Image (cartoon, rainbow, N blue to C red; front, side, top):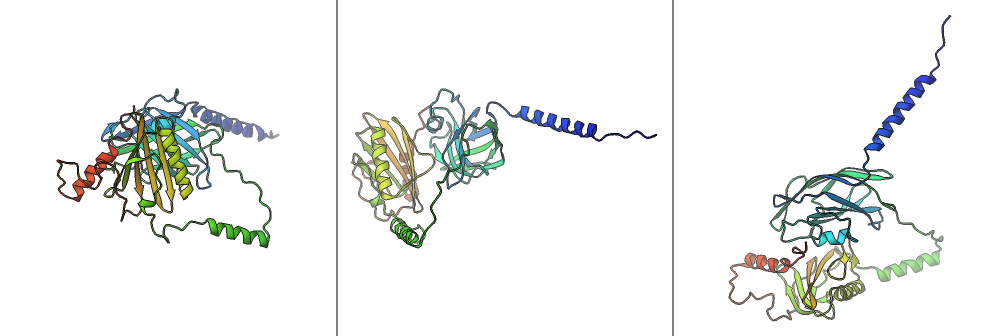
Length: 342
């Protein structure tokens, strides 16, 4: 007489094995951020040891988060991304990334670089990016050494970290009423009135039309490198607020990486293919500002209002050619970018 064997013990064993494997995998997920690898600046390792994962608003209608990699412990910082941008946390990388791993914001901050922070989108990629309900992991890589104004940088960082509550939250859209012919026509008319000309179909905005804060003085327009510098007797926050308001009125849109505080400010704006990066720092009782432009028309810049116009070399100096003058102006514009704020 043959004994019939039930298949259930075998199924139970397989189920237990699967659950055990899942439990082991869950145990490998860190309860704190883990970072390993290198962040080189001119051959010097930035010694990245910490990672803060921040929630942020969606960008281009896609959910996103911000990854703040730092050399120094950011636990006491109320705004790690802001402090990282001003080298208060040592060498740092501030990355904005979509849920699919696409990077749309990258601020490079290395203590070995005199010209930092700087933005570099397209030079760094996210590899093997994985997102679960509770964690995110991946590898940031530049795929080799990159250069920015004669500064070399190289990134190869692997990380895994818990996600904060609300990470990768999508934009919630309110239900819209069904469109009627009359409402559709009205909406199209309104959109037509508010529409801005695209960069590919319209002329570039003349730099002379860029609105500056009312308190700006000693304004220098540096045509060779496309920079504007000025001073003000007002505070950093007052100048940043006024500047932001005027840019908004002209149609400039806020971009990732804008950080406005009481003592330092970074303002990033975009309009019809043109980009602005504005650095404002305290100096004496007031502040100084540097405006880095891309995509503006510099064919007829306004005259500088400072004692020594940017178009003229400093007395006693000799400029051999345009390239030497460009390098000189570039150094003047960038030497005080928050490199000494550690």
